[in-house]
Image (cartoon, rainbow, N blue to C red; front, side):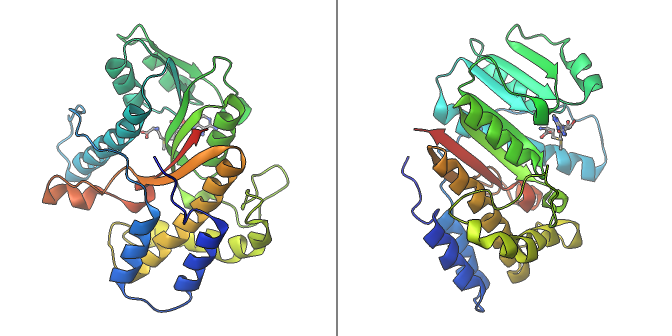
Length: 286
Ligand SMILES: C[S@@+](CC[C@H](N)C(=O)[O-])C[C@H]1O[C@@H](n2cnc3c(N)ncnc32)[C@H](O)[C@@H]1O
């Protein structure tokens, strides 16, 4: 899979120059599209237990289904492998799908929520294990080929990147909760930008990129694709550019891809692809 030449300092500066001017939604959409690398898509049979009749809960379930499908697509592209680690595995849905799809692969789910972990370890798969760990204090010992994370809030994405880099493994990570990123980080926090290529933009990240990325969240309907939202989405993409460039500097081929929203199978689904979980960072170790 060829890398997108726009994922570069020059590409970053080109996007900034576009954001300074007034363009139509169509042009901005095209710009967004040009930054994305789509991995081959398949529809998997993902039927999550739907016990709740409430509409918003059903929508949440459909979203999760689409997100899991998107993650499975990328994992499948990287097959074969022996060990996969999922950071912040939550209720273990993605890890369970992986365990069922790849019975000879060991799947480890890591989460800081001990109660979840206790429940999940009582599962029907012989290749699925869950461990209570704080990702910020965790490094894998078992040489995973893939470290992945779905819905890694704020700086958890940056930690997941570091875990993958330390294990020299491929990474698939879906960032979210940009609202949790700090504009005035303390010494022990992750300080964005992390890449050397964008180090001259530290002030700009604090004053503009992080602020704009936060703004899309909670304040507006993220799924609404009007000009303002597409612009804010582009700021999020710029924030993730730094993470992709950081991976490149660590010897990875890096891609920004979509895990939701690109292959809408029916009209009803399109409303469920919220933008904070639209993109995944993919890093393939060379
Ligand atoms: C938004 S949920 C995502 C869960 C799952 N990946 C999903 O997509 O449904 C975030 C999960 O991250 C876990 N988490 C938060 N901070 C963590 C940390 N420092 N280390 C490990 N897990 C953490 C939480 O316990 C929670 O289960």
